[in-house]
Amino acid sequence: MTVVSEPTCRTDALITLRHDWSRDEVLVLFELPFPELLFRAAQVHRAHFDPAEVQVSTLLSVKTGGCPEDCSYCPQAQRYHTGVTAQKLMSTQAVLERAQAAKDAGASRFCMGAAWRSPADRDIPKVAEMIRGVKALGLETCATLGMLGDGQAQSLKDAGLDYYNHNLDTAPEFYGEVIHTRAYQDRLDTLSQVRDAGLKTCCGGIVGMGESREQRAGLLHALATLPAHPDSVPINRLVKVAGTPLADDESLAELDPFEFARTIAVARLLMPRSMVRLSAGREQMSDELQALCFIAGANSIFHGEKLLTTGNPGVDRDQALFVRLGLRAMGMPGKVDNAAHTMTNPGKTVQRAVACDAISTATLGVRSDSCAACPTIMP
Ligand code: SAM
Ligand code: DTB
Ligand code: SF4
Image 1: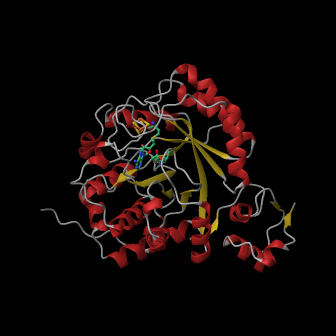
Image 2: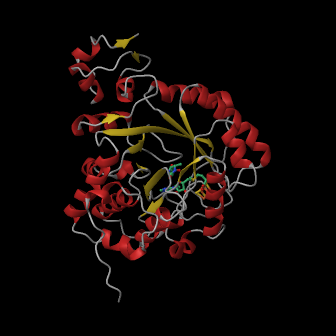
Image 3: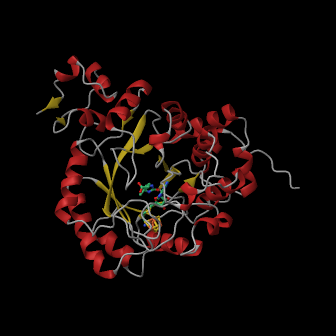
């Protein structure tokens, strides 16, 4: 057995970006005592981000259900009977109304998802029109449309797309247990098209699908040794949707919440400058687990009652959690660095950045008397 020494925790290790992690090194991080792992991840987090800031994104399913793929976790796969009804691609106008509402509610980023294996060339101009419209609202744009063919990433980039989300989902050797209709290499090829087009990559995976710790390490290793670290790394905890093979597998044990927090911490250590997104599965998580994840370096969430087809914590629950943890939403360009303020004051614009009691109250998501009278909120 090879003995792997613990990766060092010197100051330069806090800021150095590495692309040469070995899988054994990643596993050693997973196996650190929990407080030590969280401490290290929190240190790295602070070296690159304000640990009190969390990016708030909104997700919209612009084309729901009817997908020909067989991803064993997915409620949108046509072949499983999950109660999701297949719908056509939404109109641009309907998408823009939702984007405006998301902006008014405090989101700074808007992600559009489609249940496609890959988009047809005829769909690209329609999605491009949506992207142009969302961008024109001043929102950061992200899309997840499946595998991309030649030239499609470039067309999306030309329309103003900022990020493309395409996940590796799990470790290479566990992948075949979950998905049979496309290969790991197909995913790597799409990611390379995305990078070549100059788009930012959003790439992560799902845990809690019955993979081992070694395989969770394998997923994070695969992500951290891509030619460039993904700019954003969504870590999803499996949402069990009845009718999907993974939900119907009674032998599948729940993932230990501490193991989920470990996964977030190791992602933060391996990819120090990436946004680590606490993605699907938050509705089933306790507030305490989410807090551990924020300490471990998660700095982005999806906000709103729904993800693509499954539930997400309600707006009230998230605001209350931000209050209790003293977190604030990351800023919107041109406004005070505080989307949460807008989140609690829909339709009103924060005009200047000041550190006053009212702002700190509002950032925490409570509309108090002092907040209502706050001179920084303009009608
Ligand atoms: N069809 C496109 C694709 O597969 O790339 C885009 C949409 S797909 C729903 C985006 C990601 O959502 C998947 O790669 C997977 O990681 C995540 N996801 C889907 N169903 C999930 C579930 N039940 N629990 C957790 N994550 C899920
Ligand atoms: C990602 O990794 N997680 C988000 C986003 N990318 C598109 C999607 C989660 C979907 C969860 C299942 C659903 O709501 O249908
Ligand atoms: Fe289709 Fe994407 Fe769901 Fe897989 S994850 S079944 S590709 S929508």
